[in-house]
Length: 418
Image (tube, rainbow, N blue to C red; front, side):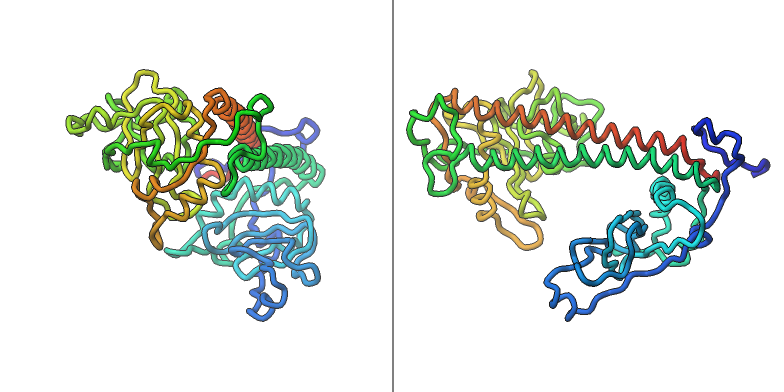
């Protein structure tokens, strides 16, 4: 740099504006970088619990043996979480793939944690090695960043950001409760194995008798799908949109409304002439992902509820199921295939070792139960879709808070220019 960078944050609390510049330091100047300890197999067996996970921390692992004190900052040394910063307020056992910071400088620990979280992406860039990456102790020790040397300013920044963390945690706990509530409803609004009616039933339908029992093959036919990989898809333009199985696993809602989803197009240079008319999706279709490395996701599905007059096809590693007759109301099937008993049956039908797969033939053997009255089906769907809306809104609220914190940190902490 031809001109020395002025180390002052963009946002500064008024009472500290005359406290001068911040200081560039190394992490090794502020603290000792101490590697955790690996427990031997006998100790793990005797406790019956793993005190650390993937080099991380688990305060519930030990109740009588610790190698850290309260308010300890840790940095993951290896694995997928390599470079992740954490701050534990209680004693815990630190495993062999993690570093702890023993602070030997007059600095607020909570502030130091927030400063390191701000620089977390740069710390992750210190990774070396392929396969399972790791961060060397010297690299952590020599890592440079900027801090305020004025303790009251440190404490004010830490308090501001910690209160945001508490708010994010509170909303995350609320999200977990909503997801648990939905899980309970999916278990109780649909019959379990051996039952003929669900445990919970809306009062106006309690005299409607037993639900009807059939197989998936009794209700649905399976249509031909295409095998276009990601390289044949784009998000800019095209005449036909395509459902990729990866999007079923990661982002599509149970009830698929094309106006609310981001769906790729088939590239214009790819011929679509061989796509049969019956292979274009219609409302009420169920689309299954037929492959997964995770048992919990194998056979995961969505139901098409709104196409907005757009052309949509089911693509790579998917199965497209269409009702032979309109026995199931639109919206009901989506949640039916998320219900506990049916998910367990689909998982039992899955085949494979590393990658699990399921075929249309095997899904056709799965037994389902449904109420004859479409009004009851619609009420169940409406109940669960309303809950999904709450969950979505809560998730968005958490993301907004995280973005707010990220923006605030960018203003509160100066960044060293390269």
